[in-house]
Length: 399
Image (cartoon, rainbow, N blue to C red; front, top):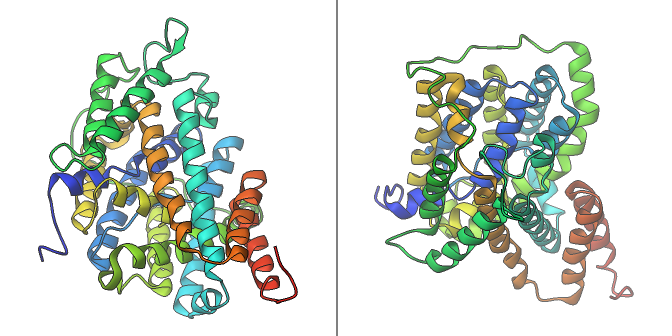
């Protein structure tokens, strides 16, 4: 039991490591797309707890980024997002339950998986830097460097750059400190700064109570919603989900946890995400998945057991039930630059997985996927990488 669940400061610190990926998309989808904050954060909490208990190790929970990014950028309505969650859940259940995902894995070279991990890590680092310098899509939509702080500059210097720089230094100093874990100290410090610097949020606007989520708060999506979601949201998301949230994630879990990750199979991961999306759909939340980047974040900041899942799951779940729709005000206290620092260190951890490749051709495939991802998207990089990796098996081709 002690190896399966630990509830110490390192597990708590590690459980907070992926907030940089999770919170910006979640908050934006509440504020811009009108998703239900109670249902959204409760579904996240339940997914954390359920997946941790089942798999018995640290398990990440992340938003589906292609769907999230497009939905936020184009201000889609909640019905279309809900339709995408149900469709993604159905697809994942089919490929998981039938074993089709194992066939996909059999034909996916290691160089492609490493390329997906390298690209995901680079995207996390790039996204983190944008949060720190104030140029992320979310900050631009809010027309503020730190949307929830009372002021944006210290003289001519953006306040996000000052906070992010200090947080990065403290993270470097405390990264392997077990007494004062970096993830925990930086996140707690961020909340303190948020309150001290006059965060634009009113924690007293809602009363503490016992709030239960509404089932189907937006009704059941119509046929037009499902058609739009399939063509515009689900099809672009599928390659990224299979590449990063299934194949790259299961591979990284085996690398980190060896025999302890025996339940983390491609089939089980697909079914886990399918059930999470069905649940999130019912509560008016967002599409959810696992992911290699999330695991790298949790692991780098100290999470090693399912105890980290229980703790972060309870934080999300209890806050959602106690505060209802006002739960988002708590998370808005955390400066964007703090989330950016978490992303940078998580991304750097994930990019280093490429170091176990030995052949020049394999490095070429991995870096090609990175280049295509940066120029287009991870789905395109994954598909192109698969084609090139198989072509390079022909001995007459060289790089």
